[in-house]
Length: 599
Image 1 (cartoon, rainbow, N blue to C red):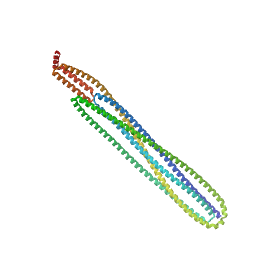
Image 2: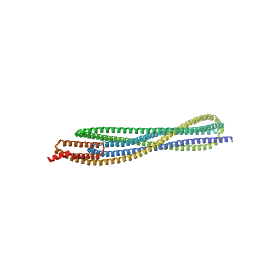
Image 3: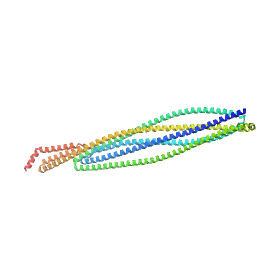
Image 4: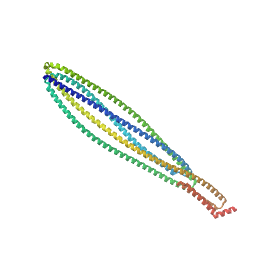
């Protein structure tokens, strides 16, 4: 009976050992499942980042297209304005040929051109800055993607290594368990092995207690690590916000500085224009003094001035043509650069697709291997159950042979020593497993930190995109306001031009009437000079001619200083009538005329 109880106890111990083996197998399965979950999470995160990068790329493409559209609109408007300016310039040149050089119209035209170009330049510069910001954000996201790819590859390589090591360990453990079962079958016949088994059980219980204590310590350390991570993330977020504020302030200061520089340039241009005006006025005064001396010299000087103005106009046209060529070259370069960028992006997309296909293939292979390992473990478990049944059947046979096996006690003692050595080996392997567990925890910590950094970068990029969208909406609203102002200015300019045309037509009519009157006066004066032979009549006639010349010079000065040609023509007509009335009211002239008629 005692031997039967011993056998039953040994059987129970074997059952417990098998349960421990099953627990180890379940732990290995759980670890494998955790590794697969981590791989799936990283894959999902990689896909999310990929979608975000594609969204950023689409936004960049949209903004580039909007920039191109704005540039095209700007070019069309410039062409329309140039055409309108050329037409109006021709009209002004025609008027200037008949009247006086239009200094004020040229200055107004230059001002309008500079105002328009300055407004559109500011918009283009702001859009260029926005594009640079978006390209910087795109390159940062791309860099994060590359870092994440490298981390994924490293993790994949490490996970494959861990899986291979776990498989090898599992195989070694199965072989060791099989050998232990064989040795335990041999030890069933022994009676003195009970004490050793009890000691081993006690040691196993102690090891389990130690493992539970260590797991509690590990959980506490994990909690502390999570708290430190949160604090670190908060500090990183604060620093990122401060950096963004400083960047925004720097950008605002740069824009203000550019605006002030542009204003200074405009003021310098205005000063140059005023200097030109003063020089032109001095030239005009010199011309008036020369006109008093000789009309022929004045005509020659006017012809020289017309030639110089034509040369200046030709130079301005050449400068405009050169600027248009420069703009065309700049646009062509931009289109070539955009094409190159598109080709590079397509290549990168193809590379990413290939890498994704490789990852999917590796994932399918890992799943297949995992399923094969599970089936192999199940087969091994069934084999162990069959072996246990065979052992139970053979137990009755071994009970009959107990008396014969007592002589083999020394051999069993040697096997016991070997078992102790194997137990030491198991302890060493347990320590190695603990070290690997620590390494896996460190890897998890590194992965979580990388994930947090990526989330921070995504948040920062989203905030930058929101700011860019707000600035774009504000720029569009400003552009619409400026467009309305420009349309109003154009309408005013058209009304001014229509008035100038009406005034020029009126001035033409008055000039024709004035010429007819001058012809009649000249004919009358010639008739009087032929009829009147005396010296006094010739003197008075010369005085009248001097008065007429003075009146014509006053008319020319009034035409240069302003546009009120109609009033000047009226004044000249009044002066001519007054001269004729003076000639008619002179009694001496009447008496001399009567004498001449009597003769």
